[in-house]
Length: 201
Image (tube, rainbow, N blue to C red; front, side, top):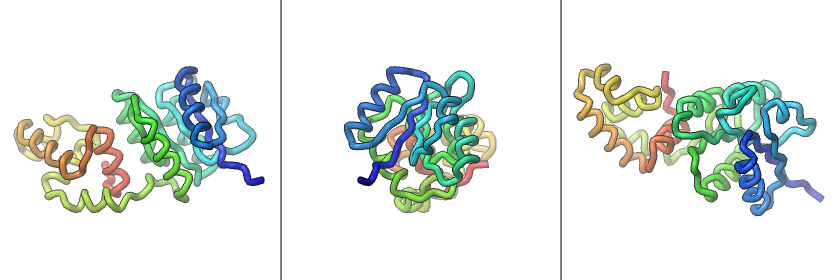
């Protein structure tokens, strides 16, 4: 009998662990949940995919990504994050996480991210997305600059100062970027930019 790939969930919130476990097991996945990153790192059997929160006691999700990567460079890691933690989630993707999802996320989005993670052999870079790359290619030079600024965590005012524009003009460009990228949220935009190969400084 062939075992299904094992997914590890790492979150200090018991409610989140329980709901994710139920969702993934309902979709046919084998799941092991951990209340802390240290517990996850001590697990004897290596997972095929790890889903981790960002903010946890003892060790944050970014540090966990680094340690998991050092143990298994090809491991698929998905980060779940609150809005205030998006900058950290982006940093986690730069360090090897494959994807991140902003809370509250749709069940379908999580299952899709897991399926993609399990089907793609990763080298430590965010999973490539040809459609996202096509959308980035459709941006004008100024729109691309605004996208890169947003991916660097800059505010509209900071981007405006860098390119000698008014904040209002940056808002207009930002709206155009969101529309061209078909991004519903800031997190969507950042995720697609990373998967399209845009490399913020």
